[in-house]
Length: 212
Ligand SMILES: Nc1ncnc2c1ncn2[C@@H]1O[C@H](COP(=O)(O)OP(=O)(O)OP(=O)(O)O)[C@@H](O)[C@H]1O
Ligand SMILES: O=C(O)c1ccc[n+]([C@@H]2O[C@H](COP(=O)([O-])O)[C@@H](O)[C@H]2O)c1
Image 1: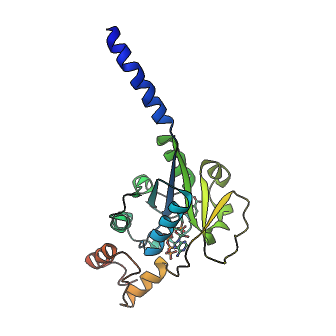
Image 2 (image 1 turned 90 degrees about the vertical axis):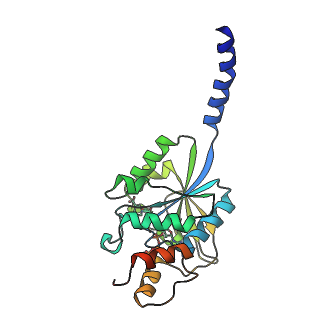
């Protein structure tokens, strides 16, 4: 009996120490309608600059600030994100917002994720242009205490003015957006090398964005 207790004690101690180890993880939320090479390049370069262990790609359910009619079904967007990150072991799909449904306020999501991963330090990656709009986000004062915002800037671009703590990372200038990709598909133009091949295959298979 005493022997069992003696054996278990050090293991419990090790487990507690491991639980307390902090992990630097990135999270990039978006509509991903569809995901494109810009998203992957941003995530890769921010992870490398800030030494992040993982980056979670998190498709929203109903976006808070984008016309929801423009976004195709969340399950299709999640499938495309899965296809986009395939093969990169540091990239993961985070389905918290898709599973929760409704309007995806980042405050609600990060409160939930911080609860289930208390040893993660989240670096919340957003486009540099979005930084100026942080003041319009739901419960932004509290949200900015829960995450470290990372603004992705283009070379030569000035840091937008903001009242919140934002760490800026300069990433190669990429003139790629989901809007442009949807437009090209509608006009039957190639999107090769703008989206990963597996995403392009999914779009063709499901006939997405043809008639917008
Ligand atoms: N080329 C880019 N450079 C920097 N940030 C980007 C770029 N494309 C997307 N982002 C950022 O990635 C996040 C998720 O983007 P989102 O899914 O809204 O794609 P998007 O290309 O901006 O879409 P849309 O054109 O439909 O608005 C947002 O914070 C957005 O600002
Ligand atoms: O919580 C908010 O009020 C809020 C307002 C605007 C954007 N966001 C989040 O910011 C991320 C990028 O948004 P978007 O609209 O550029 O795809 C995505 O995770 C959104 O849920 C969040």
